[in-house]
Length: 234
Image (cartoon, rainbow, N blue to C red; front, side):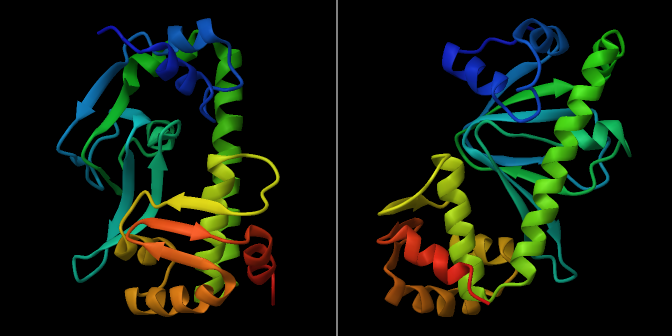
């Protein structure tokens, strides 16, 4: 298959955490068997235990990585947004997907078959170390995020998540007002930050005096510095 991307999509792929340290020609050589797929209705991409025969990069939309509780409910582990790859660790390690992935309606992906990717990677030994280093940085970031969430109150968890979304949207110093459009529902957000939906409602009420307002998935932050100070307390 041929990977047909717009110039903007190619730039997004080349700037992704997994490939940003690798030159364009090497990336395109590694992805010679990759292809773009559209998911207008969303749906399940894979389930825990399925063979890890490919990995993905999001071009548009988002993907929820989730586990299932004993009651059969979804517990969101991570939300993958445009410019991020996922499931690559499974092709290097267990060869089976450890969790489930569901894309939202309107998502567009690059799908990268594992076997040809690994074959091309073996021909370019130096690239393997760079890719593994990129994966290591991503895993350390996730571990740090989990540690940050565990030590915070529900209100601080919500505020910290909003600040994280702001940083990913606009890297660099943040001040003044801010706007966050959630890449998930509020129920999914509660699961994502490790609290109940009821606790999320109380967390929202706790943040209102700090100038945080929400309408559906839209969050307006009146004073980013004030929210940051609150999240750094305790």
